[in-house]
Length: 176
View 1 (cartoon, rainbow, N blue to C red):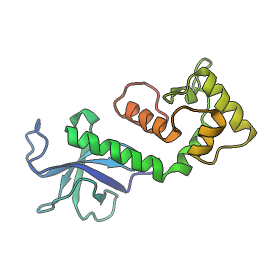
View 2 (view 1 turned 135 degrees about the vertical axis):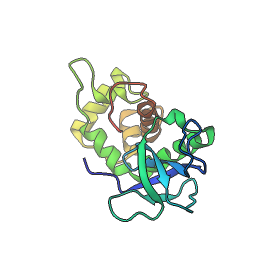
View 3 (view 1 turned 45 degrees about the horizontal axis):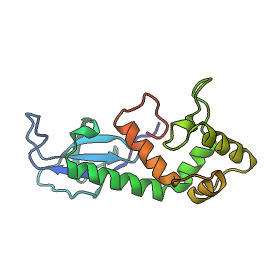
């Protein structure tokens, strides 16, 4: 799996994490692959929530080093809100990627299909989606909603599933 090159700042922590002895300026960032990282910033660098920062192997402008992956419950309420907003943007901006993934999802085991892990996708709706995608692959969220007859939009369902995966509410991961 390729390493993430960029991340989006969710929270700026001028004195580090509250539960840490390390008081260096830090930030919590969401990677392109939807992981949360605690990063230490370079000296005299301030970042803004929502700012895109380089975290790759080459010379970094803002980030000194990556400390660790962290769970979303380390975020403040403002950080959690920004996380939801950023996930929404990612799902909208990468519609083609997620629709392609929906077209390719397969069974997890004999009794469970990955499609059924998506919120709002019960057995009957999942079967309808599977039969529709065999006729013709889906090309957009709107097409999925219309052909399958979903009551909610697919992008909202994907966002909800990503949040569930980030908070480890299920042992199966399909998007993170």
